[in-house]
Structure formats: C-alpha cells, structure tokens
Image (cartoon, rainbow, N blue to C red; front, side, top):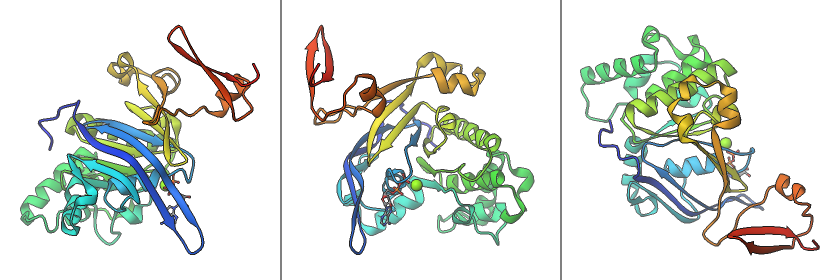
Length: 303
Ligand code: ADP
Ligand code: MG
C-alpha cells in the first residue's frame, strides 16, 4: 500500500499522445495529441462521447497499447522504453483494471475468494498469504459474506465489487476502471462510485474512472472531458465542496461543486464549444481576438 503519498507528485504524464488504428482501408486517429498530467493519489473521471478515445487512453495508461506518437511517463518511466518483460511486470503490478463486462474481470468457474487468490498467482506469495490478503480485500469491498459464491450467482454490482478486489490484489499504484458501472442500475452505480472514493481515501491509490454518467463523474475531484482524442475541458472540485462531500446531495455535486475550465494546449489553442459559439454569434471560421484590460476577447469577424 502507499504510505508515503505526496499529493503534489505527478504520477502520470501524457505528452502529445497520438494513437492511430489502421484497418484494411481506413485509418482512425483515436488520440490526437492528448496532453494530461495525473497526480499521485488523484481520483478522477474521464467522460466523452462514444468513440472519443476514452478506452484507447486507458489502454495506453494500462500498458495494453502503445501510442503511435507522443509519450507516456508513469512514475518517472517512459512506457515506450520498457522491454517486453518490464511491460508485463508493469501490467501485473503497477496497474489494476476493472472492465464493464464481468466476463473480462472474473473467471466464472472460480468463487469470489478464488478469483482474488488467482490474481496473486506468480507473485511468490504462499497459499496462506494469498488467503489472508484475499479475505482482507473482500472485507474492504464489503463482500466477505459472498466469498464462496460464483460470479453467476451474484448481482452485477456484487460482481463489480469482486472485480475491484481482484484489481487491487497486487497493490497497484493505479486503478483503471473503464465504464465499470455501465451495466448496473443507478443506485448500484452510486454505491460503486462511493467505494472508489473510499478506496482512494483509505489506500491513497490513484483512480481513473471512465463513465458516461455525468452525475457519477461529478463525485470526484476532477472530471476530464475528451472530445476527438483530446482533452477539451476540465472540471475541478472546489475546495469547500471537497471537504463536505459526504453531506452533499448528488444534485448539489452535479450543479455547483466544480469549476469548469477550458484546456489551453501547448501551442496556445483552446476549444470553443457549440454553446459558446452560439452565445457569441460566431458562425464563421474566422474570429477577431483582442486583449483588453488583461482579458482576451474573441468576437465574430464582422462585429
Ligand atoms: P471510447 O472508449 O471513447 O468510446 P475508443 O477509444 O474505444 O473510444 O475508440 C476511439 C476510436 O478509435 C473509435 O473511432 C474506434 O472505432 C477506434 N478504435 C478503437 N480501438 C480500435 C481498434 N482496435 N481497431 C480499430 N479502431 C479502433
Ligand atoms: Mg470505451
């Protein structure tokens, strides 16, 4: 577990990440020069339309895919410089994954306890050590009572709790969850989101959650929106809300708790969304930019 957590440490740096998928006759640019820093101990969510590049980003952070260009550095190590063997170790020990589909997280012919123990195979732990650790993890995710159940005999929410325990079995520094609540009802997904928050607090583990549910996304410190393979906006929770998070309703969190920022990239570009363009009456591809009283003002070309 992380005991020497320093909150200002940058754990993950994505620098101009590009990912191109080539199929027979078409190239898809899933990431288009994505820049992002994630601090050690952060709890953040990633939102964005389907196809915007969220899973690609998670797979690159998790060491399952290599970027076509750009750089990803985790805990001071450039993943592109790692040998195949280092990569295998990285996937096994540095990151833990929770996927949307239960079949990808759990072996259906193993019980909850056995699934968690299986995740510790090849770690050099004795059976007894594995058992102790697995029971501890079951307790942590609130599933001790289901330790001998098979995944098929559990609800979707219970399966995801076990999946989280499996993902934590090797004490990863980073927990990656790709739409972990995509297949469960709202109440259950709320509970799972609360579990992520508790684990983040208690273990100091860095957690990145992809979700399409903005209400859930709002329960974290930082929400990053991806559009067309780049970060477009970031919402950061205001300090006074962060301190009282448990006493707030979902509505309050969703409506008021975050400050929204547009991201200014290294080349000095920002993205104006459709709402902003409409409100400013900008409907051409040329704008006038002036600086007045220390403010940058963008206006339609003919105004
Ligand atoms: P999201 O998770 O936000 O829905 P993805 O990262 O899965 O988006 O996909 C981003 C884009 O890359 C999509 O256009 C998708 O079709 C494409 N893509 C993702 N993975 C592959 C792949 N293995 N082969 C070809 N295209 C892919
Ligand atoms: Mg996806």
